[in-house]
Image (cartoon, rainbow, N blue to C red):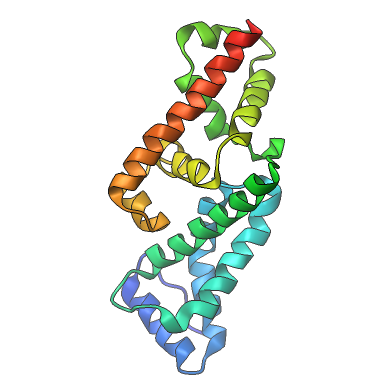
Length: 201
């Protein structure tokens, strides 16, 4: 088996894929080794910790099954990222349908983002030893009211800081749709959080 090249070597990726399609399925282990960390980073930023390993596995299963349709004129890394994002999207779409948003879904990035969107007056409500626990509770409640689409665009644009164009490519949306949805989703989150704090205050 050949050694694994540096992540991002698209020529090497295409050679590996050609080999797989030519009858060397074991070569897929090279792509797995090369991109495992990359896929785990995408998935872990979008789903609860306990779901990361299984979902990342599903991403690679999907990629393997879809290799015959891969366009060698494109980047395998971006193609794989698209599969990962759509798997995360499906994960939240299912839970939104059931209104299940586990507390473990709240990452450090989410907590930092909540702190950033709250008004100065509202931030004061989180002062003291209970700050982190209350921030988690507030975000848990707010996330439960978001659709899978809102949640994914918020994560990609506002939490991970992806350029709108890149987020659009991953989601399969137009750039305008991402801009509009990102703005509206952030406002929905902010309004829900502030309204809840005002009611509690």
